[in-house]
Length: 451
Ligand code: PMP
Ligand code: GLN
Image (cartoon, rainbow, N blue to C red; front, side):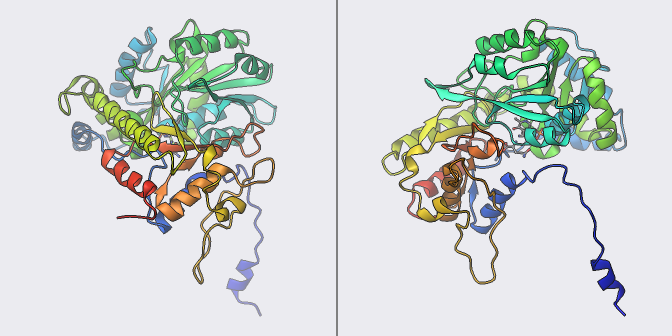
């Protein structure tokens, strides 16, 4: 007679396959980082910490008793603060109780709105600019919507879109236009002219709801003002969800607190989803952020600069460091930096590196020299339409294995079946601090790994 254990192993379960394993984009490079002891310029996790006053307020909030469930859509103290701060930016009065929803980071806001707004399997489309933050694809797939993209292209020294291509991509089936300003991974800041073009086109399709992912809104470079919120233009507020991230603003990405602002008719659809997925959000963190809001923009924090001014300066310094350093070694490593205007990243064009990337990375996904008994890291098995391994993926694997530095291949920021996928750009994190970035660059320019 078979043992009970054996019988159990025979049970056949049918597991759902709700979304593709796009997590692989982060997993491969995390695993490569661990295996080859890399310095990371990959995932957008800042090298620095949140301000001390935020941490102190968090501890105080715990002592004050903010340890139990709270109002689902945000503690009144916090939503009142958000209404004040963003009322000014949006040039209107925001109702803190009906037009704001606090979320478990921007990511969960995106999920709740996209699932809450899409009628599954009815062919409702969500239009994005590609490349884009890869999680967008997952949220849309989970909502059983149809993902559709228009290209952002580097032309005449800036990332641009073709308004006609955008207009032609909108139709009766478009449910959501998902904008990300400032933009990950390109660092593009959609300026007033861009936003007016978008507004005019979208006004021709009044049924379309806009989700404006504004998580990098405050992080602009070269003395530019914070990004202009799409919802602040004309009557856009009526159809727009604006999404923000406390993780980004307070340099506390692990705290996972975000907030969204939208007319109640739209917000209430996402609220139903949030009620069942997360319910209420981290209570002491809400209190800490609420009490820190004014301080990060007004109180001198480092060398007379506020916390936000300082973050902008640090990221910009790292951006400029990489631009000058890559330019200085362009003979040996022929990459072209494409200056970002905002956010956590800088893109480089690696087209001319094809001739120096070792063959093993270009010709297949089996690029590792595995030791006895060692299995390969999780890999993104993706190909370009001509059957080749994406150039940027080969470049980043080469950098990880032989230089000990993690960067992100921008081709993975396109849908895997995207006809407009481009493989000539690599995304570099500028959020890790100057010391870390210098060490990483020493490795990049060295013949082999250092440290
Ligand atoms: N949107 C964009 C464009 C992002 O880059 C990220 C991640 N950094 C998020 C949303 C998610 O933000 P959060 O960590 O607050 O969930
Ligand atoms: N947003 C981060 C990035 O683009 C990653 C964190 C995440 O949400 N996956 O690097």
